[in-house]
Picture 1 (cartoon, one colour):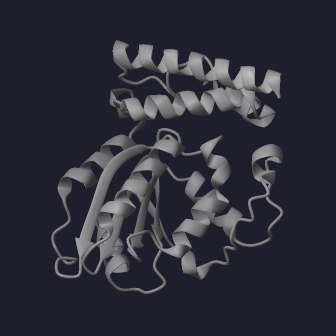
Picture 2: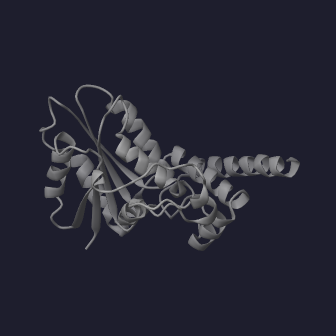
Amino acid sequence: MKKIVIINASIRKKSTYSILKRIESTLGNYNVEFLCISDYEVKPCVGCENCLRNGSCFIKDDSEKLLTKISEADGIIIGTPIYLRQISGYLKVLIDRGCAWYHRSPLVGKPILFVTSTQVTGSKQAIKYLNDLAVQWGTINTGNISRKMFDHKKKLPNKQLNLFRYYLEDEHKCNYKPSLKYILEFATQKVLAVTVLPLDYEYWKAKGYIDKPYFYNCKINIFKRIIGYIYYKILTFFITKNKTNS
């Protein structure tokens, strides 16, 4: 049975929590784990980059436990309230602690769905950030469900939920069409793996990513393939040249 992790990034059990619980009630055919970040101790990242260079974090708290639960899921749903036009601090701190996922993502090819709730405004800015995050993690972004205080009890949209369920099935991932933004981000990550961090290179080589236009076989047209290849070659040239001259 496929496993889904639902992340509640609000300390309160109000709008965000209730929307996520309603979504959970529609996922009866799956193994669902509902997690509230505020129930765990997650300390801020200190930017030491030990996770990037050595593969481990020296901070002792619950972040590894939470990140492991997320990485082991087949699909991820993240819900956050909007504070000052951005995601909650709880969620941002957890994302920062998983910064190595930009380089070595365990979420590649997994569907992700975002949920935001706000009094009136701010969802647009937060969703832009979350969409960028989905790109960096190599996930399949199945959309977002945004609600304001006046409509948080509104019926859940079938489009996003059905798309999320669709990409939970492995045989459908080949039908995914990553945007050019996804292709260029992949190329950037590959350049870093090949030219900068040895741990990244070992990981990418073991996964078989090095010689591919994207993480896995899916629908990429010839235009995107060519642009991605040229971008990779140009970026590799400049980074290699800069390393040689430094």
